[in-house]
Amino acid sequence: MAVPADRHRIACDLDRLLAERGMTLTELADRVGVTVVNLSVLKNDRAKAVRFSTLTAICDVLECTPGEILTVLPPPEDGTV
Image (cartoon, rainbow, N blue to C red; front, side, top):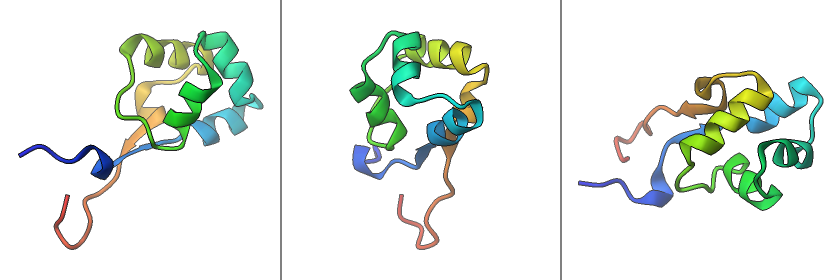
């Protein structure tokens, strides 16, 4: 059975990475070549998908790995997914 899209457990740590690098979301968007709106959707955990090319570009600009951007949260204690 598929997990409903609004109940995924992937969290984005883009805020932390940007702060550590002293970079704004606007600057990252310009350097990656995507809109601020698209990065905002990712940053605020509202994305339903991300292109590997976009993820690669973000990693290149931030000098990080996908695992530093995206984290899988533990399942809820009540067992629902």
